[in-house]
Image (cartoon, rainbow, N blue to C red; front, side, top):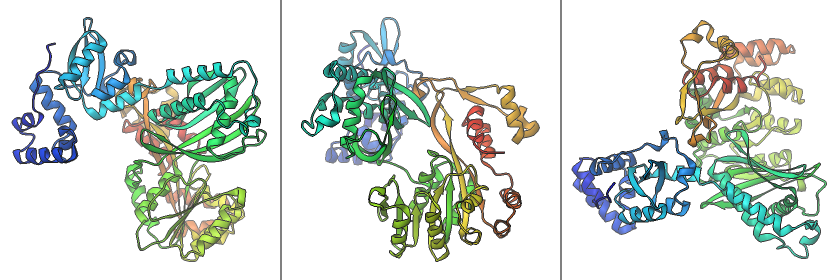
Length: 568
């Protein structure tokens, strides 16, 4: 195609009646004052959307507009343009059309960018308009650090040579030993983990090799493998960063530190554990930037949401959120805290670790090394005249008893517990040694939850369930199974070939009504389970999971996976 013409974006939008003359004047003044790009001013001031700008440019220049959300990008073709230039020009090489490359640009009127891209790829190019936000997201997804990580691991391996070094013994004499290659390698690992939205990084010594894996949407993926001899160097550097004992390799240790990735602060919770081939290191990544803490944004069904909101507005009582590790319990509680937070109320949290930071809330980090445990902090917190207390986890009988007594004496207490489902939770408290009467008088509700992976919307396609899946669906749908439409993700560049992208919650709520409380005071657990199940009226985790399948948001296999964690 010929070189694009230079056009004025504001005039195009006015001509196509997407923008008024008055808005254009205000935007030009704003641009002069702030120095931002004019298109960004239009979008941030709410005059037009990015899609409207892209469509207007496509019509003016007579070139296609491509929605990258539904474009299966070939990473090898994209990398014909280096990452630095791709970010600078907001451009992606999308297709090789045998003689010309199709390049998507958010601003196809940028003549300098057009000339530079043509010079770099050494081919003629054809242009398409793409959304700037989608371009940046695609760049983050495709230009991963996998090759950099492998190269840096090899560099570190070469620096170490064949000599076996006890880094713990030498660290005091030379704390900067091997610092440069180790730091570069770890920075690349954190950068890549942030790009693919990993929640955990696993550094695991195996026989003859070191493997690094990321947990993405609840599932582990192999990131890279390296020589086993770099494992002690990585463990040492991470221990130094988290202020752990670098000479102790025989006992597990826990700590935390913070890193900055792309101008975002990420808190890292680290756990080390001695294994047969060295120290295994697992890091939980807690992103402190841009987290939206809203109850109506985490996937609760409307009925559950309305009941849960009403319950947490009560002045006193205990509200428990249950589920396995990594099921989003803390996120749910913080969404509730964000709604309850006001200048009229004093909120105190007791956590290990502090996962979110909210202004106006007094947050306490548990530290078992100095005997600052949940029970001790909770006792002190109750002397601080709180209205609402969040206890990170009911780990033992003492903590549970203190929390229930606090709920009986005019405080709203929010906490978590590890149980399979909602109806078994009151019985679990009793098994921990909490008196039956305290459970009946203080516990207000139990919310049980899981996280399911969501089908990638860029590659969703119809799917025919297997006989086993149809049989499972019939437990909820009966003869309506054949009337449903089912989907799965076939895998694309947007979801790294997994067919899933992101997760949403699955919930069930047990409210402690008078009938349920009376049953809790009955010594027969079977009677309690029957009454509690009747109160929930079948609104279980499985039913919510099946509802997501029918809506086309998740797969049958994914719904079965999380539901089978719950006993029928």
